[in-house]
Image (cartoon, rainbow, N blue to C red; front, side, top):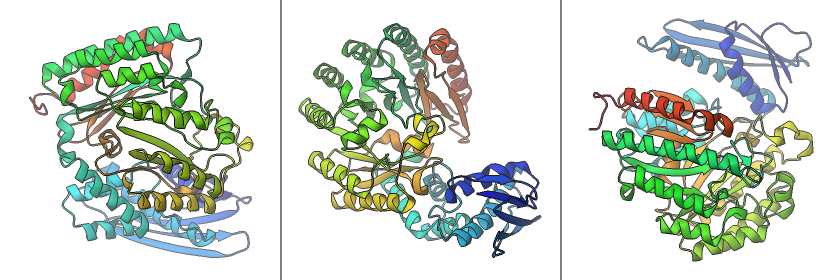
Length: 503
């Protein structure tokens, strides 16, 4: 679909217009000019003063016309950045409306294309806005449907129940530790993950750098008296390394980090069942870690083969029982809606198999075509379900989790996600992941250690976010881990200065 846009000259509009077009059309191209080859022409009239006023008129090749207008007061004390954000949202409002009218498709998340919609509701709660008013504002400003607003409210309520002090956690930090190795790379994956076979030299060097980062960051936290709320071992697959390497890593955590016994939650992703062994489970138990992930993604063997997961369905089930017998009392499992070749029947089978295991938590992902993944690069090879069937699968997941006592407690979205849906984390009561809540709502600094690990520094006073990422390539990380550690400590020093220090 080629769309000619008239009346908007600011190039900052191109990206939001493109993202919204992508919600409606498989292939779309935005042209900010008159274009005789365009399938659609959308003419905007934009006026910005004390209020923003915008109208949009869509014409298709058959001469059909669709029209929308919108107006909103602009706060006089807004910064230029916030003022443009309000103008952009107003343009998106009328743009989405005419595209919905033209296509007959209702976008349940409205104009939102970002990752963290629940943050909007948290901000309104923190500002003291009554719930009904907050809901009205979300509906009016962003065109979010009542269904999704209710889901947001349910999740926010659950988060504040699980972490009552969520809004005051800025004086603490959480730690993410990235292990960038996997048995194989999945077709949909864009995480820093390298096949571990034949890479022992890289693994040894990487672990040396990671231990250094843990010691230095731990020293700094101890000196400042800053507590750790949660620790999360991700990747890659953290259980790809040997049991001996895992043992040394957790020993380093207990030696270097402050008050490890007081950390609220420590999670280790054991997502690939083919990495789980009795020896590794024994190491986890030794260091009092009992929250892990074992991720089937699907219980259809042909699907696992198609996406590059070299384990069997039976192996997933066997390793789940092995972990349970080894004392793992909080197991998460990930499922993906819309994997190649799968529809409602296949997903119903996966839910039926999940029912036999009943993990403490379940994250239901909707397949996203991530730009750098194998699946996106070779899209023609992977047949996926259409929007209607994907929505039916999501409804099936919602009904199944509710019927089995699971409650939604976190949510995030991704670009190019099938059906413009979402990823939802469900859990049995009291089994929610605090780390997942913290990272999604961006209310606390998360220090990323290891190859490809991203840090997100939240100013304890202003809430301003600063991003910093370690390199994804193990060699680059191994060559420069000391410099990256120093840079993180420098940022921490600025954040937790005397004005913002909890000490």
